Length: 573
Image (cartoon, rainbow, N blue to C red; front, top):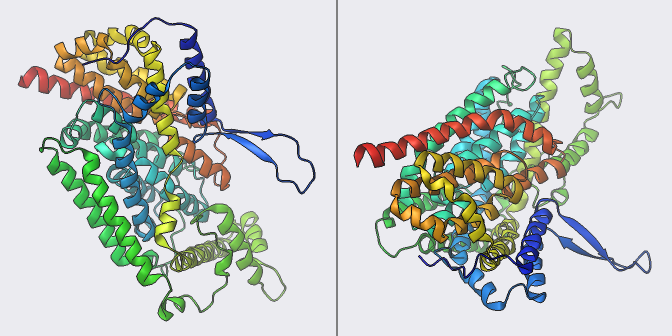
């Protein structure tokens, strides 16, 4: 295998390149905006330079090009791909599946599942916790961790809020399970795709290796979550049950679309499994047509349902308490908007003395010792469920008069596109100026033994994810193990090769769990919690919880991987 690196000697350009690479990562993790010029008058619009996920990596590439630390040829190689890593194939795969999943979300299926689970659990807090853990794990396993974070976070926030419990245990459960379950399938995380495409790991081969570690990791995660959050304040045995009148199916605004989307996703996964045995068929060639089918179906839906039918318009016309025009189209189930709507509802619900529900909530909160107060509290919580459900239903009704295709298109994570392309190019530049060869010399000791390879690569990847974010870390490590020092050792020992590759894959998924900056999902998770007023979860507080949770999960996954390698390469062969 051609390493693609001409020299490992470091010079001034090498250090400049590394500096801008690290600066780009800093601005990805902590975005800033820089004012440009001075505002002449109070009415003059001020311009800003935004350094964030979408702009920092491409800007770093541009600066390196201007200062002649790189050239157009290197940038072209970074965009087109080399050594088995093809950025275009990874992004086509990612956005094809993302479109299918977001389109499926627009049918209301995920909200239906969430409310169905809440009703199944009833007043049993531990059962609700368990069912939501299973739901987020299955959703992440079949789609991706990003889909779970985008669709599940806000609902869990509302479930815990109307139930009167702290959201931290449910939020940590969602985040941990989503990142671990994303190991199960090739398509669960872009980091899986980077490594698998670089080394031609097929869909079925990937799942055969990673399914057991994923199941083991999830089981250990659930056990540790129950231990760490065992206190009643985090995970009460009983919670107020959702009102019996709430019908989860009311969120299936497009029942046929939900069935169609699920069938499309399942057929896509089955096709990926089937084509794993066909030479020359890459995964993006399979997912792209399915993404196109989902797009065509949404266009067809828009043509037929752009204007709601009279029956649809009148479905919630009685007792409509909130103007549809006040509901934000892109903020389904978010705290700030819905709480604003609830304030409108409560302001209209006054008793004879003009006392509103907010005052009633105070009286219940501070006077809950007798049975009468407890009964009032239960009645109030039931009314909160109804109010919030009403607003969510109105949002979905409002969506029917909008273009589903445009809405899905806007909700796709487009910022990942310039970020990913920029990082691919930056890693290519690092390779050209000698850094990947240097790093390979430092890490080649991991190839001495397969146990050392699994443990060492897992630890290195988890740590590097906290410094660089998991996608850049995986791209960089993949290029490092493609260097001659590594490839010579890996080609001589297949067990070591597999240990390195699957240790890297597992580490890139588990490394996303440790801190909020370990992955794009973590950055997105923190942004949702903070901007929507759900939970003020600080960096160190989040890391403290995960330091208690993650070690046992990593040990479990490592042990299963080592056992698999031992059975396949030593016992069987």
